[in-house]
Image (cartoon, rainbow, N blue to C red; front, side, top):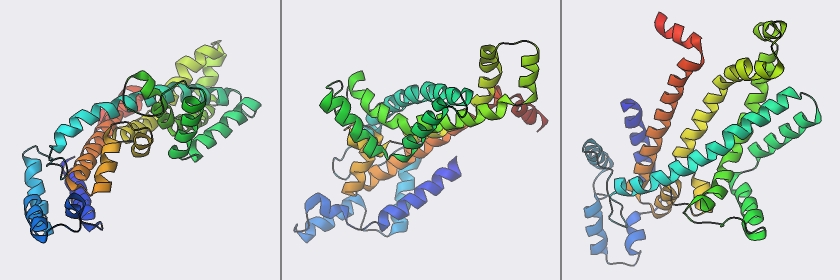
Length: 299
């Protein structure tokens, strides 16, 4: 992880400095006194060369600091501690919708192969993967909020405020899980150990629950880990559309204002969360697949 984080900070720092625009002008306006502009540049350290600025940022990281926002003068770490739980709530709710629905739809499609149910679920999965989040989010907002008056259209709050962005965020993951589950079940159904289980007289439901689902979980866990890691990284579009006060919206505000400490802090936290989630997925593999445990023991 340390080399990865160092590389991410280097690339992100270089790219943020290459962005057009000057955060100082965003803070004071282009018609401000040049002396005030130079004073602010000295305060935030943008008057130094890029290597000195990067060295100063690494020094802050070594102290456990992420810097201060140019506009609010608040510590970025403090703001992230407030906004990260909101993104975590949104990510957990989205996965709570996507995982069971995706597994059930994929299983139903595989068990009714080449029938109307299979074709309908496959078509819905393609739509879920094809529609951009900002479009599906607006459609759900129009139907469930403006027309049916069931859920509030935006804001951060309790379960009613959480459902609409979570449903929007879950659609691509749900569609991916449905397709992965369908393909995995079709591959496993024709394997020798399934034929042996049928020959022993096991019922279809027991074969599905005991034998098929356990093997299906291996590729499914990969999809869950990648999607959950991306959600924790900050669902920028979803949080922006629905006014959800999480990391994604915080990062978007930082990008618009050229608030470099905010951008760097959001990307760093996103990288750490993504790496940790993938590490957890690797550990889960050990329990789901006995071959992985034997491979680890051989090494």
